[in-house]
Image (cartoon, rainbow, N blue to C red):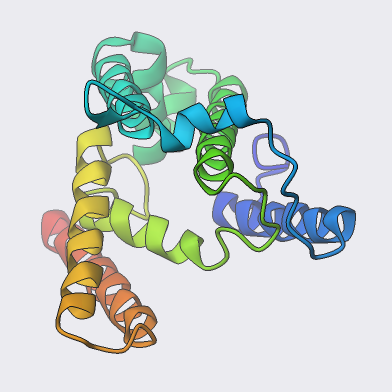
Length: 205
């Protein structure tokens, strides 16, 4: 519906997230699934040479993703479409193909994230990840991505995640209520988006 009909990708993503989350709650009847094979926990609870396996997987994904986005002509077209879809279409880029591939790729990465989370907790919680979508958007924008599209890097997004984690840890270490984390995350998101919009306007002048 995004590639063919032109539905806003953010709205389509949030809508599908709600559908899948609801289906998960219905299937699990709201209860966690704890019968996870012991061998499956290797991804979330084990380490290799003192480094958690989950961190190793993250590093590999970041490195491969960064190299591919910089070196692959096919993946570079994602930036072109995000920057100016009309110009990309005139240049002969297959808009539908690139958009479909991008959604498939990000869905696959979301699956990897979910598997690691399930492995770490040794259980599948239907409520896991609720509220994380805003933190993800905030991290990407803080890392240099633009809601308008056409900008952003894998390392930048990782930096955004680290910054948000440091902020949340700082709140905890200063004995500030965990309920303030949502307020702070929201303020950071609004600030990051505002800076992004102002930067874009200055660039157009």
